[in-house]
Amino acid sequence: MKEIIILSERKCGLKHPAYNTILGLENEFLLSGNVKILYFNFFVLKINIILKKIFGRCSFRDSRLIKESKKMGGYYLFNCMSINDLLVNFETLKEISHNRNCKLILYCFDTWEPQYTEFEKIFKTIEPQYLFCTYLKSAKYFQTALPKTNVFWLQQSMDKTVFYDYKNKKTRIFMQMGRKNESLHKKTLGFLKNNNIQHCDRNYIYEKKEGEIIYKNKYDLARNINATKFFITAPQNIDNFKKTGNISEVTARYFEAMAAKSLIVGYKPEDSFDILFPFDNAMIMVKPDGSDFDEKINYYLENEDEYNEIINRNYRYVNNNHTWTNRLNYIIECLNEKELDDN
Image 1 (cartoon, rainbow, N blue to C red):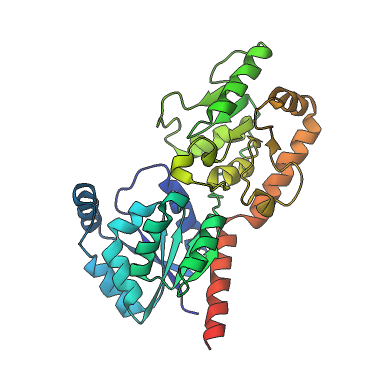
Image 2: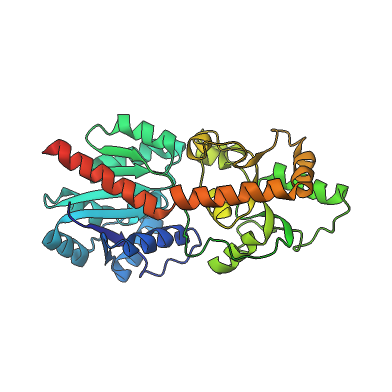
């Protein structure tokens, strides 16, 4: 099998924290030695972003990148967080995919259910040879909707060079990062009040203002997760159904929390959590109304040995089964199997 070549936007000044996930993926893939990288042109991407905002579509191709791909041939992997990433690079991706010497692999993260129709139109025009979706329901949908494309489920992961055990003392009780689940937030505040614990960042840190970035440095985020006993989280569909539809999925935050040895507490992602973590107490699940929140938190505060057993087991399991290296190996396995079938 030929090398996989990443089509990367990392030199285009993309600074949103969500792209740290893709940068972590690229970094670990490159370390494998089985992967090379080609960079999108900064100016072409920026022009297309502007055109997308004004007209809703983009028309400029990255001619240099297309020329390089035609010359080299092989497998080209584009990792995208959202549908916008596909739209601003639409013409470039389409031309690479339609070149007979190239095989385009799309790895798509946020393929939310309400956008299936829009995604389907894009995929049918670009015609990637391979499509990997991080959401199980999305993979199943597109396996039926795109009979000419090889579609697979490929979960998210974490950057193991950032999210690991920093050996920090557990000085904070709770953390809820990024989008805040209000039900769990209220239960957390209630726990602090009921136990006469001061409500401050030392005991509970969370997004005070919508869209607020608390830790601009990903290493600071990882170190603070490592110093936190309980990481509060929930699937986005519970409180943002309009955006997600019926998708209830494990995202990067779950892997990151486990890799940084914090115990996840909250509502379980129903689509795939038990598949990805096939053992008891991988996270501490609370009832839908949160009525057992205080009881379960107090139990693990009082039973430190059991708490440590869970976070250590999760840490080992994530690092053995859910790294980006695991994901790359699965991609290579899928490509090899398809090549064998074709031969």
